[in-house]
Image (tube, rainbow, N blue to C red):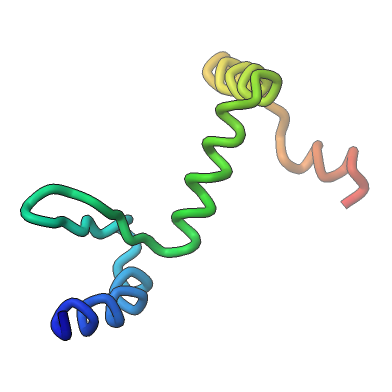
Length: 85
């Protein structure tokens, strides 16, 4: 148990140093029971699930992807000018 505590206490620093890890799998008797991840990763996943659950947002997202694939985009300089930035 002490070894597990030491490992858990080091996880935030390890995940911050190596964000590509994403999450660490915690097992019990060889079976996954928990995932430990940085708060940023958790928030990102939560926001993504929220967007995916909203039909209007998903429709807008998919339309944006189609527009990108077709090249229907606006130059950033033009957008900034129209927004007065």
